[in-house]
Image (cartoon, helix red, strand yellow):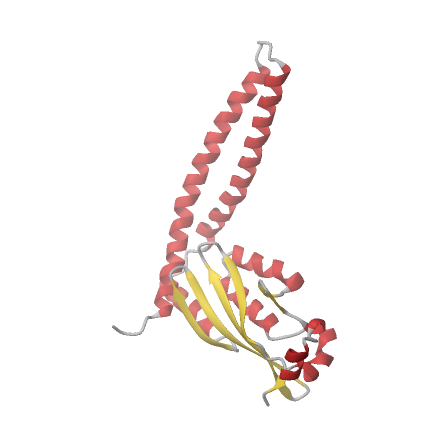
Length: 227
């Protein structure tokens, strides 16, 4: 058996995602229509000529509010799938080029696709005052089934004495949940949500390869120099 062609796997996955969005869009439309019918029934009860006990009226009002919330959530979901169907109709060659554009991103050393997940290995290095510092190695996963990016540190680039002392809180970017993107997390989530995976991954990689401006003074004191 030959080596897996991850570019082809990526293109297959992207095409599968668009097909799923088309199917799910129709399902959501049917769910919204069903809710609309239920809302009409409950509204007619409130508008009807028959006397309704206060307890029954309150129950009906609660049901209406619950249905309205469900409809609002479905409308958000519908809008998302409609955008996917409208915007994600690239040719297969474009999907393959998209994969290689991600693969060519500086500091990405490995890329693979398995199931519905793209996995990337990132060597985080920072150029500062003519030297390169090791900020650690990271794994970044893009799960297209849930449209979410997760990260995990594989190796730390901290100096041994810093790791042993535990005094790295002032420049800590690695947490139990992965890399801390701070305020930039929302931007990355938005890019993934829109299906702009190239921009999402490249943005995440950019931040993983850097530190906040106020922390750059500490980099030579805390991280290993590689050149």
